[in-house]
Length: 234
Image 1 (cartoon, rainbow, N blue to C red):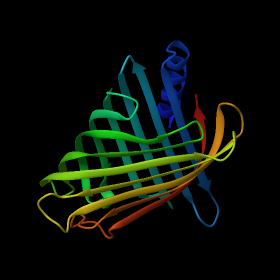
Image 2 (cartoon, rainbow, N blue to C red):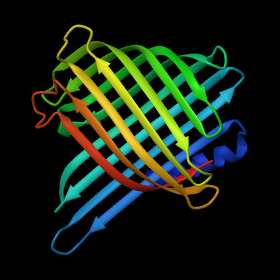
Image 3 (cartoon, helix red, strand yellow):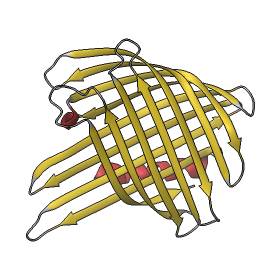
Image 4 (cartoon, rainbow, N blue to C red):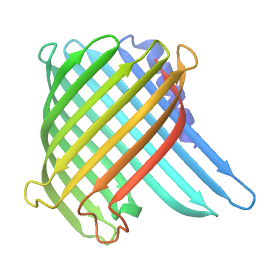
């Protein structure tokens, strides 16, 4: 976990230097000992930098879980995204990401996205946006074979601030394969955040990832994750 701590410290330093740089760091750890021995680590990082009508974004996520010294979950995601703002409503974007989840049957999944974003509502206490575009996927499966996919992508996200301290956020993503109708993915998450200070807050989130046509070595189509973590946002 040392690299996570160093990354968070470096991010905080960059934030102090760049006025148009935003940061959201999230970390959660749970360790149980005694009759049951388990360790759970969850970390998430999101940064963005805006210059003129351009926005650069970085997102990363790490999940690792052990039960009685046997690894039971390991998920890694990282991605870069560039947005070009056309006006207050529309933006265009390109993104490149990767994820790894050996328990879901794939060693490496590369994701290339291109599309458009539309701000349906953008207010101080509430926003709602929608995205649509194309995704190219290159998967390296656990058995060493490769799978290539051309997919469409639809995404929506909204956040409601109930008061200065409490907010709720939800997103839904749908990715259907353009060639195989039975092959589609659905990702969705609902989260609630409560501020502790002007920087730190506690966040609880429920994430669901569904793959209707998973890799052959996967044991189930649905992965869920319930987390509670400390968040630093500024």
